[in-house]
Length: 376
Ligand code: FE2
Image: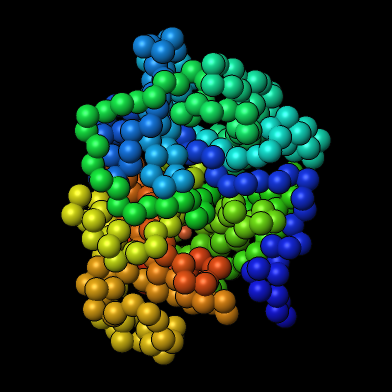
């Protein structure tokens, strides 16, 4: 029987790849100018930096948005021959790069390549008058990439090639603080090779596992394993579909993304009620609230919590606990027309887990949406 806590398991990770956190998340999108407007207006991100024809970049435009420590880069290609155009034609809008902030981008590349990584970007040093950023990159699942970013000698806004983006339109933030975790969906029988890749190549450790007996509803099932680096600053849960009566939501994702990729980005807040209220007021769509019975059972399942139950129930916020505390969470609907990427809003009160106790309520809610799309 597995008796170690998540915190104890993290200490078993290897330290050849020290990571300080998520540096940025880059999405390839069909129209970055309009996407940037959406993430400012709906999510409260702030304009930070821009690269494009006006800064000497000829083949693409990239908008960098920030909220708390979260940096989102939205990139759109400017011609049909650009490989980014093919990426978007195949996958739709989605996450291309999960960039990790490291102390040494050259060593990160060397260590991971030595352990079997597939190269995306050989180490390069980008310079401008504000200093230098050193970067390298490797592929993970599907066409998704981990860039390693070293910026200790850089004083500029984002990185060389970008200029500060001053906008006269600056909606207030919604209390989003940092990236808590990013979840990947992989294909049939691809879970274990992916887990092994994170262990062997990245030195990560598997901190939690759920099989299809634990994550299922009447109709569909999935398996999930959570990979973490040693300090727990970077956590990547990985999902694989499982056989059920009907199509797994992971299979629906794989069909519409046309491959493996990032399923959701979880962003942390210190006040989930205020954050969710603000997001809803700005038009962000969330999954339907679970039935009233969910909230009646909460005190028994989770125990005492600091928050009032009424606003949680009103907003449909989910609660779960583990041996180290509890957490509150809520999931958006997909943020594009393909049923692929969505966001999770999470507030942790000690818990180090990911809401396994909510999986059933969550998935039944997702299935309702899936059925509306005719994909169940
Ligand atoms: Fe999550």
